Amino acid sequence: MGIRPQGRTLILGGTGPMGLLAIDYALHGPVNPSLLVITDTDNDKLSYARKHYPSEPQTLIHYLNAADAAFDTLMALSGGHGFDDIFVFVPNEGLVTLASSLLATDGCLNFFAGPQDKHFSAPINFYDVHYAFTHYVGTSGGNTDDMRAAVKLIEEKKVCTPISACFFMQAAKVVTHILGLNAAGETTLELPAVGGGKKLVYTGKYLPLTSLTQIQDQALAAILARHQGIWSGEAEQYLLAHAEAISHD
Image 1 (tube, rainbow, N blue to C red):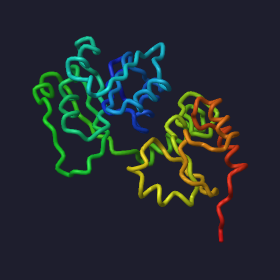
Image 2 (cartoon, helix red, strand yellow):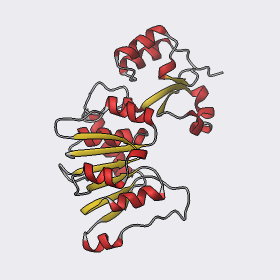
Image 3 (cartoon, rainbow, N blue to C red):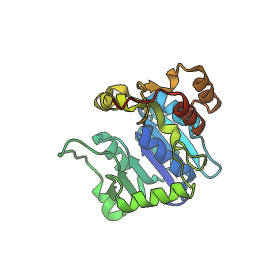
Image 4 (tube, rainbow, N blue to C red):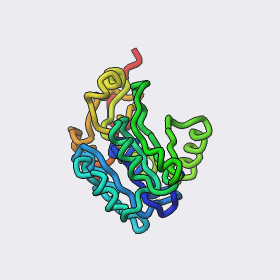
């Protein structure tokens, strides 16, 4: 993750699908912070994250609504030192400036959010760049080497896909909907309105877009209940065995 070992990490706007994976990796990856603070504007998403990603022995985690996450509050959580690593997951001018003001000496701001506006900009503290050695990076996605590394980690069961049985990281936690190939096109077009997390497409099945909270099949709902509402290998095997196959006509 490139963060300072046992440092202080802040994720702004961090309860979307990618934010949840970042939380998971910070908690269970090879390098862990001693303090992890997450903010967002959606209380439901914050509650979901709080339930599925609690503090670990090596990492104390705090979840805050952005309305309650002003400079003074966040700085106090850091013990007055600021944060060693700050990830900004929303392309918002105010968040970038807030993040800049919260960097500790030699701290790093990672602008993870991809802005649509080519002229997006925000004020940052260049005094701290010069005297406090703060620095800024942007993350725009992985490359081929990253994909190879991800496949290797999955093969070694160090990270999990929704169908794997390992529990080091549970990427299945970010899946909120399932669907068949028949619904993939419309869902893609309507994605902003659908909301939620990741949508898992079963290309060989005829299945409408379905939220995991609205599963009608009682047997499948029972499987979900056993796994705290999280999609699992057991749920997938049931779906593959019982869902209608998509027509090739």
